[in-house]
Length: 218
Length: 218
Image (cartoon, each protein chain N blue to C red):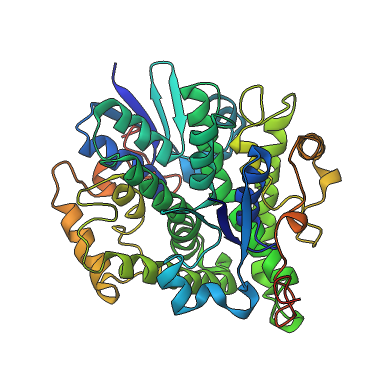
């Protein structure tokens, strides 16, 4: 049975799962979430898809998984790939995934939303400045870690890489400029040259602007 | 050898690890972090303790672990406790830990810091209001989930509970009022009655106010 992933193109958290599916060579299909028209906030979505009201959600037969890192671990359990070469590496991957969820993707996703997907007059300037400043600390941690390393954990591509890159290929401005962070920049280039890599907007249907005809509707 | 945990009382992320150690009945000792005098931002801390500049850090002989969920998993691997009764439960625990790191503890920790540990004239009102509002959505998700359940995952106490409670026992105001969330309130009471439970300020030395003599110095 084909795996389905509830997702939408603008969601970097969805991208982490979609990229893992693509690079694992798994047969999968995106299930479009009409995010900007409020689908994840609807009672039906919370009841039938995810009570947390979030994307992505992976459906594989009776298995129903949410949180991109859990989805990545599920795929690695099936294929033996990207999960690290030892128990120590597996713990280190988890460490970077938690760091990403707390300090990197969570804040980058929110900031990008506020700066690009809210009407200009509704953008909260103080929150934007505050979050952009905190994100610079996160970029500095990742950039320093990647100095002299090809991949975040060990000597090979792992789910740590497929997690931390979640928002970093998007074109919309949110204060992240690749040239400012040379080690992150080189790592993103390296990752994009691996088999199965694809840009988020090539992997998943886009949901913005709202009320526009979607890929499925056209 | 006694396990050491680099931590300080005000850190709910540290509390998640300290509480797991306490409830697992492990022999451990806190290693005080002088957070409010900038210890985690120092070059020495980033070089010798944690390059991410965060607390907690567990040291067990040569094993050096950061991120509270990784520490909790390490302890569960040793004792077989709190890690869930099946692979499905283990995934569900991880799911709630990631949700907590993204939507609950990360925001609660930041908001509590801004509202209590910054000088009044430096408190960013717009960021405080914005974050408090987002947190209400998180409390609502957890409260709804705990309706009719004793514990977050399965029929027993797990690391999901020891994670999501991270900031919820603290007395400082950050917009969380237990009486507003009856299912969270009952669950916090239930958890606090379990063997080995202790309040964060009874498990770890406090670091606030800065420049005060610490437990170690007195």
